[in-house]
Length: 77
Image 1 (spheres, rainbow, N blue to C red):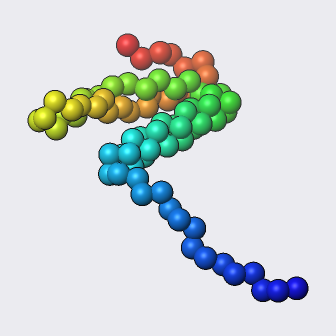
Image 2 (cartoon, rainbow, N blue to C red; image 1 turned 120 degrees about the vertical axis):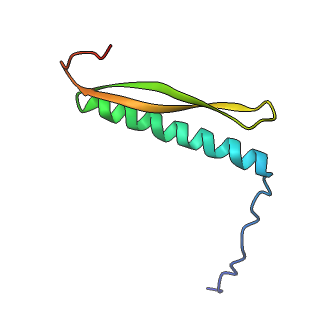
């Protein structure tokens, strides 16, 4: 049997903008999975916008914090 020749795989040359979008998408996916796991463990989860970040050039994004309470706990105002 002959030896296999290994070579580095060509990586996509994503732009900084595409990498930023990919990071947000991946983080949102991980957050959604974490919310599902918390619900399966008996918690209620609410994501609350705490602020809106602006860059001064017309771009903005909501920033959030999770509110987590055990099953049967009283709701917050």
